[in-house]
Length: 86
Image (cartoon, rainbow, N blue to C red; front, side, top):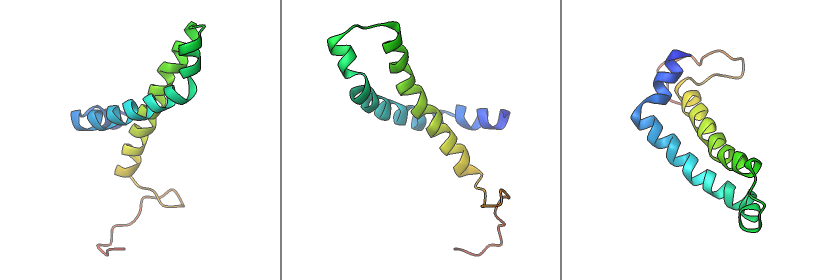
């Protein structure tokens, strides 16, 4: 768990995951929340959903970063590194 926080908290990792969250989150807000933002009512629920539209891609991008660092095979075991290229 601490290693995951270290990896995701690195400046380069944060730049990548935050950029992804900004782009994807903006698209999600435009798709899902533009009507309520323009037409109202602007309730706390709308703003909570907007925040989640940015949090979800950030978490997803962070998990993708971690899974790319530690790939697992179908059995759940780490792949064997025998030096052969696939």
